[in-house]
Length: 185
Image (cartoon, rainbow, N blue to C red; front, side, top):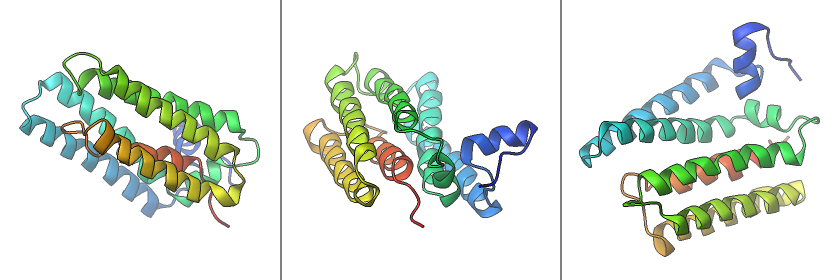
């Protein structure tokens, strides 16, 4: 496996994986910028205050860009190298429960929607544990199954979040289908 470069480029390599092609980088950066901008425009049309528009754009850039990034072979190979452990993957995924809390607090108001945070955050962590503990051959179909349940939860059981209808599907694509499933060799 290619090693990260020194300096600032090495930081990028450790984030997305060393050896990311120009094409992968362009698609990743384009999706990140376009996703953040389009969500910002949509939140503006919903009449949200500027602080929430900026917060929503940052969440969108991370989730949308991350979904694209985690589907690249370069990133999958990097995060599934031999020294990466299950707990490293789970820690990365669990960190993203913060995104769920932000949406529950800032965009499902008034007030904090604890049912949403517990349901989506809990399902994300439980799904991640089950996918990461499964044999490699079952990770992709399990991740897809758990994604479908998350979609049903967000659209039907909990109801969509105005301006964030995309959030749960792309979060689960980023973390379960993208991050938790290794590249097929």
